[in-house]
Length: 229
Image (cartoon, rainbow, N blue to C red; front, side, top):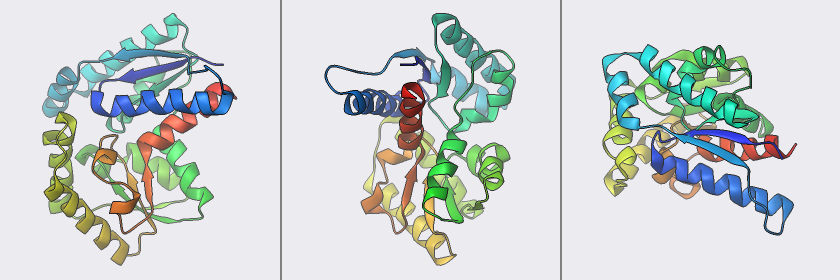
């Protein structure tokens, strides 16, 4: 079994889901008392959030590169970054390590393609929805990506940072997300990517008018498959 280098804490709420899936899937696949081999570096999200708000992405690249290098030196075989937004920094992180990073967008695209969907909605932080570091990889995989309008981008982003990252799950916010997903369906989306690792706390398959692709679950499942390959 390969050792997974997990960079968590962004937020710790979603990192719990990663940890649970990695271990439960290892036990399911191998049986008995098996669990996943994981080295975890849990960053202080307050530092990264402050840097994001100031546009200081170089500082975040340094924090995550140092974390990845620590995991590599500890014996990790590959890196899993337990958040979508920080995948913006993957090219910079990769320059500082010699082990691969398992990219969340690639794993998600492969899962969607298995279902033969082409047009997909994307929800996430404002960075994820408006910048290209996730969308470009999805497009490269042959998918057409749809995001909400400007007002709803702000709403989705605010719910993530002001509620979900703080462990708050509000029914009023669930209804707003459901409205946005329903509108995406009207515009031709065949499924929706929960492109922030906290959104799964709020939206599940039963809550959505569209098939749901939860990047947290997909990423963690792909990680354990890679570890056991």
